[in-house]
Amino acid sequence: MRGEATAARTARELRTLLDPMRSRGERIGFVPTMGALHEGHMSLVRGSMEECDRTVASIFVNPAQFGPGEDFDRYPRDEETDLEKLRGAGVDLVFLPSEEEIYGCGFRTFIEVEGISERLCGAVRKGHFRGVATVVWKLLALTNPERVYFGAKDAQQLVVIRRMVQDLGGPWTVRSLPTAREPDGLALSSRNRYLGAAERAAAPALHRALAEAKWRIEGGERETAAVVAAATETLAAEPLVRVEYVEAVRLADLEPPDRLEGDLLLAGAIRIGKTRLIDNLCLRVGESVEEILP
Ligand code: PAF
Image 1 (cartoon, protein in one colour):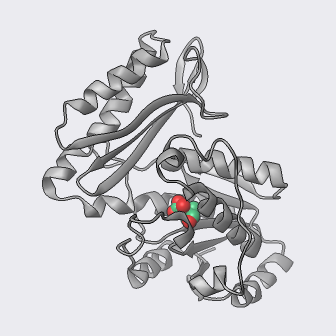
Image 2: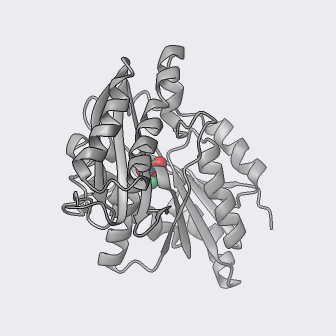
């Protein structure tokens, strides 16, 4: 079933369009986005369309997940192009709320997922995951889908959202799908468009560093510090890169393990010029080493 990407700008319009689908018993899949859609987002849309009867996408650049001095004002916004892509893919509904629609009427309620929100990106982007958790809960409450889709590139976001949905008893199934990459390994991101030519050439160093860490683990290395040092060294060879963090942590609680065993997240964040990029690899380390989804 292919939809026409009908736009809903208010919660009331969204409900009016979703109610008949629900009363026909159709399974609804939801892809929340901040727009500037790329192939990574479109792979989530395709995943939803394969698994559900109807697909709803949202486009909302969420001010609550940007800190002071971050790129909220210059975050790319191109509603027409995004709508064209969603129409072309056959999405049924697109929710395009205003800030007032999400945070109006004296909004005061925020969701704090403790501990895991302060690790990795959360250590640098204070309050970021509070903003993410709050908006995702609100969007889920408004769309009430069977399934919601997120990209593995934002692995920490996935860990935080799964924890929130489990702790607060949300009835939604959280699905993750693989990171979409350029041929040279760079993870697709709406922020890649900020990169100049030399910066773009340097950017795949992050994926190379994480691949190096994985290669060490496949070779039998189980010391966290040795694996992190190998990845950091790969990044140090790229003069345009400033490392924010590189870590090997347990997927469950994002804390560094004594030994590299079980389900792990190799994660990194770098800055190239004014652009901040993140990436990760998620591994199940036992007798063999297998890539898994967060
Ligand atoms: O991953 C994103 O694009 C955003 O963090 C999300 C999930 C749409 C919440 O604003």
